[in-house]
Image (cartoon, rainbow, N blue to C red; front, side):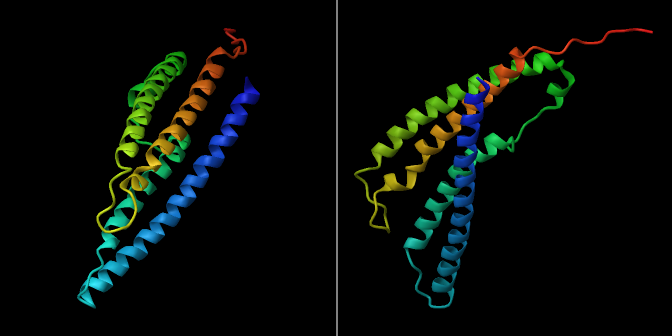
Length: 173
């Protein structure tokens, strides 16, 4: 099982880092687009209509591209004050339960995102000649990647809890 976990981990690492790097490029593009909007509005007094819509789409894509990386890296907001006070075995079991709940929610969000994207196929964006579904096409991709990261977390958690523990030395002198 360790080899499968490592393979999934390597795949998730590649996908999540690619998404993170692409999100960085999109942030740069969004900044440039917003600067174009500012210049066109305040210097030329003739704002472009497409800049706002494109920057919003890039913001959505950026958030969804970076989500798998942050989930995998453990960079999401967590409150672990109470968890740290619990015994290690309880933390391991609760971690598996929480991961299963996350997988369930991600699965539901994935299915909903497919419907959302399909619903926008026939609708054109207001200021750009592209379907609205293109703006939201990242959501099922991101949820699929988040699901694979969750599977990796689950496999690592189960492996950790089922791995034989070295005997404790309870010698008292």
